[in-house]
Image (cartoon, rainbow, N blue to C red; front, side, top):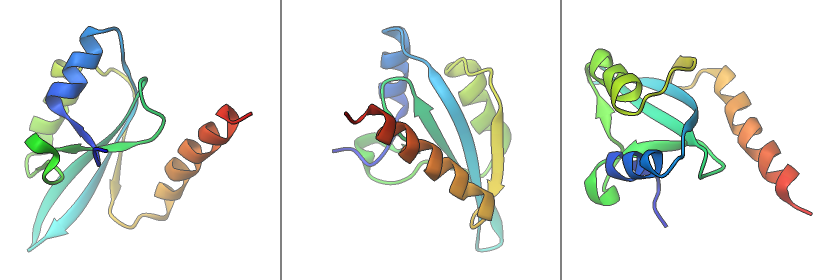
Length: 108
């Protein structure tokens, strides 16, 4: 099973009537440079999943936050709130809890 979502898969599902429910961006500092990774929560999946490169080889990170926002807003049509967090931020726990609580609600 895929570890995340690729741009092509997202665009295909959006064309089939799906939508992005939530988006958050986690910023890491790698060798003194900021890199941004988007996690999306699409209507066709239950959890937040990272954007991945072609072939699901690795996380797709962006050094240019504006380019990532253009992808999310223009290419994916997402108009909702986008949380921006630093890696390790304690507030990220609530996103994990949100995904887990919805999974529990779906179980009989």
